[in-house]
Length: 172
Image (cartoon, one colour):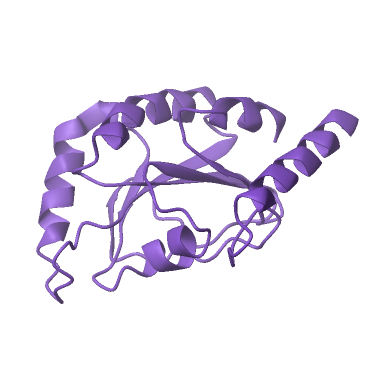
């Protein structure tokens, strides 16, 4: 438990170092998941006390995101019944129109991925609510990006899903 506390302090310090102007960071309550549509899996209505969540942001056009999806599926299987994984597609509405035509593109991508993308998947709305309330608020301007939400509903870690996500989940 002592080591977990030390890790939390270190993670918080590192996160705050790179996020001086961020409104959202480690230790803050996680924002709600307000999405346009759930494309796969079970919708997450809220972060329930006592449960751990990973919310990962990606896009259909993002090469590194496509590479990290199978890794997230492996982690979702490894931490089954312990962690709920949700991928949220963001920045798909490139022309900032009020049309939700991009939703069909995301749904096709998810369907084509099949079992390689075996966790909950949601799609941001035309206004980019998830991108704004999570990514922008945390000064995250690149994807893929993942957030771990702890048992208290607070953000415990922010980073690249291929980096230390698994190691931190083992400790959270």
